[in-house]
Image 1 (cartoon, rainbow, N blue to C red):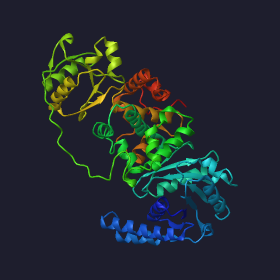
Image 2 (cartoon, helix red, strand yellow; image 1 turned 60 degrees about the horizontal axis):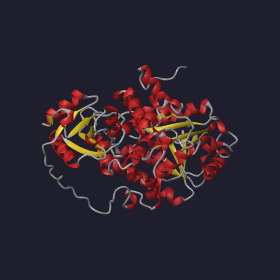
Image 3 (cartoon, rainbow, N blue to C red; image 1 turned 30 degrees about the horizontal axis):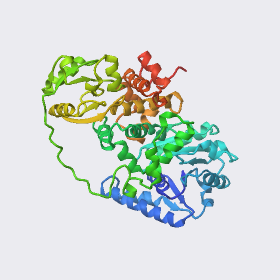
Image 4 (tube, rainbow, N blue to C red; image 1 turned 90 degrees about the horizontal axis):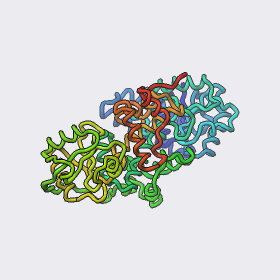
Length: 491
């Protein structure tokens, strides 16, 4: 099959490369013919590097390059069985491209858009043959990313959908079928991680560095949320976040913060501009942490996990005493903060410190401290706990940091399943391949326990009264029934 690609930017040339590598002849067109020449040179360079690394043979490189030709006009696409549009994200431009293509290609040719933010139904609304347009959303860089979102509109025929799936299979990609809805699947699912981190920062609970560290070391993300936003660029992730919030009619689970917009509007876009959440213009130096002097702090334990708290104190050499005699009272709240937990337990909030037991064997211990607690006593406790590993101290917050981040990720994925945007299995597949999370979000919910996630969300909602922490009905029903988050609805 001859594959046509309209648009010779990063996405277009990547699609051309993987299509040709799979044995398809490719025609590449761009209104700027210099862009086509540049794309062909870039593909050649990319394949040369792959040969040098032993990933492809020289013969395969030559065969791939020989299958890609530049086209001088869209009229050259008359023999294409599939044409993929990868032009600027403007509805008027995409509609114009497909109007031209419809008059050129054969009646049974597939028309596909690589859009990441526009609805397929709106793109095809002015076509005569709307049934043959479908979304094929690739991810950047195309040669390295295994996922393609396959997005039929209400008009797309089953035949076109089946052929689109066959094409995705033929180029060695994993295709997931997704409802034509704002953000499709991956862009929507990815909002939870970054916007919850932004909310934690806005609440003054922890620093950017602390949030990133806990996300990476305790949850296993490859990049912290702020590192990730700086890498993709705030010129990309802020507009996407704002667009999805607007097009989901103000769903609080998708809400960003003023500081996100502030950096965007200030041109502090991350790595590409030298500054974003981090400053890349100055060389960072690492220094040894200041030595914490251990005083004669005494601790009592309270609430759930009494046995585990007592064991922790014993391993760290911390002396435990009756509550009335203790300098500090140690608790391990789930989805709640120290202040409210202390009130519920009838203990002194000015002596109460929380420790996060959410994840077993977390590399970094997290201490949560409310207002009025003695800094001298907290410093002494921190010093003693460092005998067991690294410690981060944060301010009082319902859900610490790891609890909040993971609960948000699982909750939004559950809502995506509830809305029927994709099957539960495809949600996990897409997030692992498209966002490179260590686990699929629904699988992750099962691993830590859906009832645990529901408890975190309920506690956060009770403390904050923020609709952001409304538990998805999908998650709540399965937690109540003791079912996996991957359990499909009745049909």
